[in-house]
Image (cartoon, rainbow, N blue to C red; front, side, top):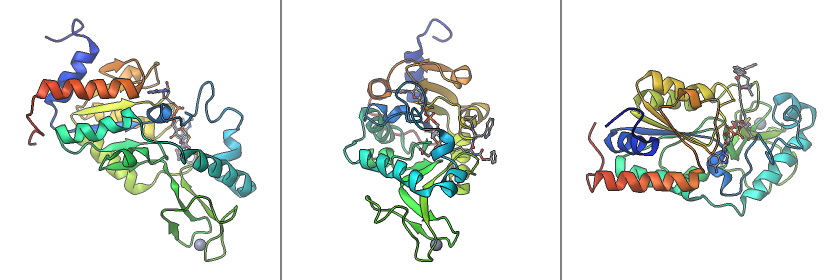
Length: 259
Ligand code: BJW
Ligand code: ZN
């Protein structure tokens, strides 16, 4: 059974159940049902904020207090936020299939809180800060609330959120790990991302070029839909648990497959 007559969900289950290695690539949509706003679209985080005002190195240079207030507000809102059933499904998939690297654009830390063992953070973390003056100091974790706004480094310079702003390079080790995971996986789950931000948006395409079967989970079409073998339309907190449940049934108690 293959081709257009088998529905997308069944093809996704079969690909996952047969896979020796699976990776996930995630964006803000995976945290939407935890109450974390996405970036784009109605009620998105950028609504009411100009990106140039808060998410560029120039913005920080111009008005570090405004930028820190924006991030302190987001850190405060995270205080009452928990991982949702979509995050939780990924560590369940690890129990079934072995390690599932999660390449995430999110900075909220919710994949690790949910129990995913290998999280690759492409755009940094809300919970770290580093010296903007370049002395090399990293505060991990950087406590909420910040002792002052803007917080200062021991060297006298300012600390900045350890996140990746527009026109900044992504962390080298995260890019290296993400590329390795994309090239190694047989199946890549692409969850809750618009796919508009580069270079992260190139990762599912690299996985596919290296032979991976690609499965999108998103309520709407994205810039990445055309590169997907299967697109499942719906929220990830519903679809991911359903998918993992179906993969569990399909595999019986086979456990992870050896490479
Ligand atoms: C659900 C759901 C549910 C909703 N379940 N799903 C090539 C071409 C063109 C431009 C560029 C290019 N290369 C580089 C650029 C420039 C730029 C860029 O990409 N611009 C584009 C916007 C055009 N890239 C950069 O600047 C990068 N740096 C770089 O390239 O350096 C080299 C350079 C140097 C000098 C000059 C130029 C380049 C850095 C990018 C850093 C991005 N940083 C941010 C902010 C991080 C910190 C913070 O959070 O404050 O990262 S921007 C923001 O977007 C954030 C996200 O990680 C990222 C991606 O967004 P995401 O996750 O996809 O969210 P949304 O909101 O877009 O989508 C949500 C999705 O969820 C939707 O599809 C919904 O349908 C779905 N959904 N509910 C499942 N329940
Ligand atoms: Zn310093």
